[in-house]
Length: 288
Image 1 (cartoon, rainbow, N blue to C red):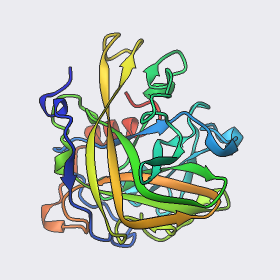
Image 2: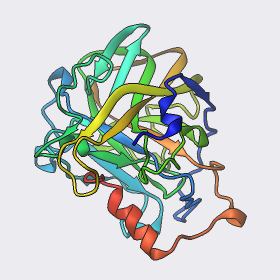
Image 3: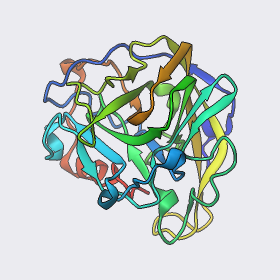
Image 4: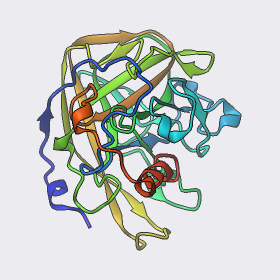
């Protein structure tokens, strides 16, 4: 069931974040009362992209964490194997009114059945992306075949969050988008969650969000009845001035931030191991 705040399709303006701190190797906010932010993957392969979500192809999905609770090496980008249908994190780039990059088809109605859960679960895929909460974010490959100028970046997120109980409200968060260059088929390590090619943390612009009118539709699932609809929302960053990227391979992330961007030890609280394990199980590709 779609919760009340999701019924409002009007665009809402949200504040841009301040620049995040460098990696510190320590858990930061670890807040769960606001629910969790999940971005959606794309299923189109523009500009001749041949790599897909499966690592065997070279892979398109990467993650990095600065929280020791997960048990992964800290502050080092990792590959993650997803379904072959995944081209990367869903991203649309526009220059004025013209779409100049699209790996999802949401804005043009060309997504086909990708966001309907089928036998291969392609449309089920979403990625946790909150780098100052559980210090974890995903980035997805995107490929440009020539110089590309954009004035808007559009990412996509699950409007129900994780709990699907109405506790997720995008107005409770701040946002950032980042683009990294590729080094050795991983995003370039900047010593923080900020991109080396582009970051909204320092670029002038405005964030807005709105409901896309597109839903994930569950056909077979152990949790939700068949026909359950899960709304996809868009997060839009509009630049104060055009940005141009040269041809090449890049990685993109669309993140939500909770509370202060820097740690606040006096207000932090560690969650019980059961809830931490639950979040860990849901952060990756088979999240429902």
